[in-house]
Amino acid sequence: MKHVLIIIVMLAFSGAWIASAPCVEASLDQAVQFFQVEKNTEALQAVQDYLRKRPDEPRGMFLHGLILERMGQTMEAMEVYQDLIRIHPEFPEPYNNLAGLLAREGRYEEAKEILQQALLTHPSYAAAHQNLSKIYSAMASQAYRRVLGAKENGLQVSLEPLEELSSFDRQTLLAVSATAGAPPSSSPPLTEEKSTAAETPVVPLTVAEVSKNEDPSQKQPVPEPTPSARVAEELPRTPEPSRTPDPVWPQALDLQQQMKSLLHEWAKAWANQDVSAYLSFYSSSFVPERGLSRQAWQEQRKTRVAAPPFINITLSEVTVTRQSQDLVQVHFSQHYRSNVINDQVRKEILFKKDNGQWRIIRERLLPR
Image (cartoon, rainbow, N blue to C red; front, side, top):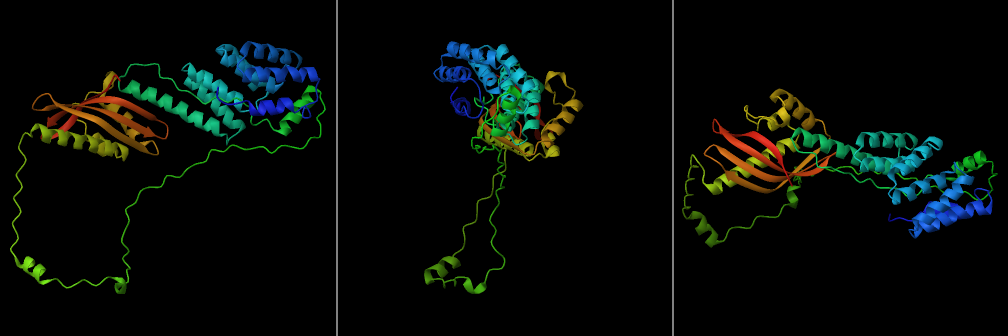
């Protein structure tokens, strides 16, 4: 873990906040110091000594969970975080770390519910918003891969862990002190820093327009043509060569360009969320993966193309292979990004010429 337990250290050393026996606080101080230098066994012993005397104290419980997590004792760490949530539901950090452990095991639905509970305690909690977005992305990626027939590849998502009770403000400490039977002191309050998830507005790119209300007086005068220019104007222009019609069956280079252009038009319709245009690229003989009927696949695609607030599609590494006069195979890398998914896959699309138009008859994911 990269960060230092700043808040825990500050709270552990500020004996004026919670009045307790010096030896009790000293054991927590020692646990923090051991944890910082990665002496996990000693840190665990010290925090357990502390919790035997103050079993429900949130700082000690949270540090206990962090130590167990670092030592690889995942189930025990989960139990500590669950106990901390049950006893002190006002702190969002244990929810976040518990969700991270669940996500590490692929239990995304449970992780999602835990993060949603964290947002009930702190609706503007930035870490929970960010990690919940990662969970949604992982769940959507799994569903997307299943629809296209990809094998489960143990997709994992890493949530950002927290090592401090940043929401452990003075008012909460006073309440905990009262519950523990220790009178709070009158030390000056600390200013709580609130973490908010700032939203950056998406500014669409626009084409600059020339103002229609230009002042004619501001226009630069057009210079008179020189004699040589007049002569050049009077010379007859060389007629442009007539365009050679495209051959019925394009050559290899023309086919490469044609299929790449067609593929980008398909991606453009998808990114523009133009459902009708997107589906028009698929042949009536298109067979979906995983045994879906054409009707079920089409309804599913309508929802997934139209539903997200935005979709970005980037294609790269496109290779075109002609298999026969009417069949062309295209391999490419696809980077898909929406508000909940950010995924990159390798794909194969098989185009077939149908009534003079190239249509998709097969689409599948390729192993990376």
